[in-house]
Image 1 (tube, rainbow, N blue to C red):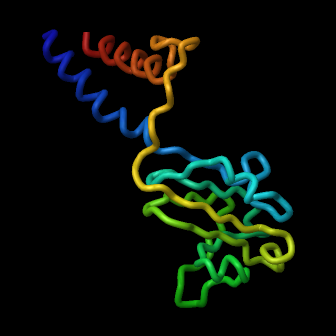
Image 2: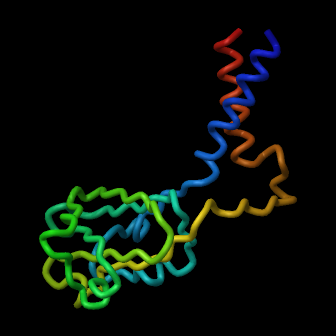
Length: 161
């Protein structure tokens, strides 16, 4: 019985660890959301984006949109032609970063991109982020991951018993 619990525990760790440790969800503009007049280059400046991360664009659906464009479309604030992808318009658009390289996004409503700077450019890095250095003050036992895993194991053992 104990060996089954141990194998189950190891399996859970192997399955959950990559999901928890690798992907990050970035809310574009943080609490400000996707709107004209915000400093998106400043927002993105200190962030490191990786394949598997997600961008979330929050905005009023009738007032803005999100177009994925190329470098020229970004520079000139030109939305793609009708043959390309349609704009995202839900007001809570989630874009998974599936490949490395430069990514460009604009709002094509009125002159939000050209006059108000409602555009975002990021560079997506290949592979998962490097693990954060361990903190001597925080200690091994109290890191968020260990607390989370301890809770999962505790629930599993309580249900299995």
